[in-house]
Image 1 (tube, rainbow, N blue to C red):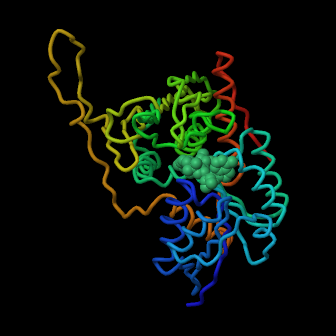
Image 2: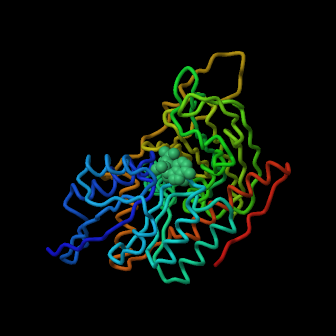
Image 3: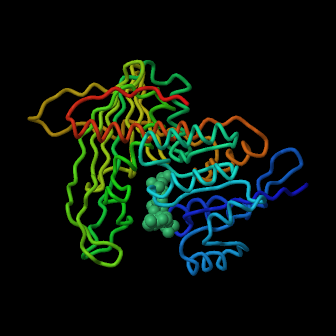
Length: 383
Ligand SMILES: NC(=O)c1ccc[n+]([C@@H]2O[C@H](COP(=O)([O-])OP(=O)(O)OC[C@H]3O[C@@H](n4cnc5c(N)ncnc54)[C@H](O)[C@@H]3O)[C@@H](O)[C@H]2O)c1
C-alpha cells in the first residue's frame, strides 16, 4: 500500500460543525481507520492544517489530536503549494471572502452550507471555481443520514407510486440563554451576522427535495421571530433580528407539494428532531434522521371520522419499520470520503458549488416571499 498525503486547510475548526463533525468525526475518524483506501493500492491520508482567528484555541485542538500544523494566517496557508484543499466551516458571513481567496490560490474547495449570503455571491463562487478548474463541493449531510437513505431506497424502488405530497417537521426548543444557556451560537439569531432559520435550513431542504423528489419550482414562506430577545455567550441580552421559525410551502416539478416547518421555538413531540412524511398513491413513509417506517396501500387501515368516540386504533402501530440492510457511517464522513475520491480519482460528484447556490437561492426567495406575502417562482440556476 502506498500512502498519499492530502493536506487540507480547515477554517472554522473551533466551531461546532468544524470541530465535531468535520475534524473529529470525519477526517480524524478516517485517520483512525488507517486512511481512505482508494482501492488502487493507495491510501489517502488526510493531513489537516487548522486555520482560524484564535491561536490558543487552534493550538489546544492541535495538541489534543496530535495535529502538527495550525495558523492564524489564512493567506500564508493558501500560499503553501502543498495544501491541496480548502475547507470552510466558519460563520456563514465569513465564507464567501475566504472561499474566493482559496479559489484564487488554486485550491480545491469543500465548504459548509450556505455557501454564501446572497444568490449572486454564491453563484459567483461556483463560476469562479469552475473557471479556475478546481474541484468544488458543498456539505449536504442530510442526504447521508440513515433515515433519508432508507427513504431514498423506497423512492427508487417505486414504493410510493405517484408521490403526492411531502410534509417535513423540523425543530426543537433553543433556550433563550438567560436561565439556561442556549444550545446554538448567538449569531444564528442576528440577521446582520448571517443568522436566521430560513438561511440555515432552506439550503438543506432544497437538496433533500431536489435529490429525492424533484427540483423546487415555487416557494411560499412565512417567517417569524417568535422570541425577540435572547442572551449571548457572555450572558448579555441582545435583540433577535433574524427569523427563528420559517413555515414553507414548495411546489416541486411534477406537481408534488412539499410543506416544511422549521422552528427553534417548538417543543418536540416526534420521534426525531426532523421527520418527513411522504404520501403516494401506493404507499406512505415517515423518515427521520435514523428511522424510516412505511405503510403500503394494501395495509392501509380505513379510519372513520367520529369525534364522539375515543380513537379505536393505535395509528402509529400500523407502520412497518424499513430495515437498515447495511451499516451506516457518519453522514459528514461519508460525504468527505466521496469528495476526497473525487479529488484524488476524479470520480463523479454532483454536490458542487452550483448545488450550494441553489440552496442559497431557495433561502433568499423564501425570505422574499415572506416579506412580500406571495408565492415566488424559483428559476433554474446555471453557471
Ligand atoms: N451541515 C449542517 O448540518 C450544519 C449545521 C450547523 C451549522 N452549519 C453551518 O456551519 C457553519 C458554522 O456553524 P457553527 O454552528 O459551527 O457555528 P459556530 O459559531 O459554532 O462556529 C463558527 C466558526 O467560525 C469562526 N469565525 C470566523 N469568523 C467569525 C466571526 N466573525 N464571528 C464569529 N465566528 C467566526 C469561529 O471562530 C468558529 O470557528 C455555518 O455556516 C452554518 O450554517 C451546518
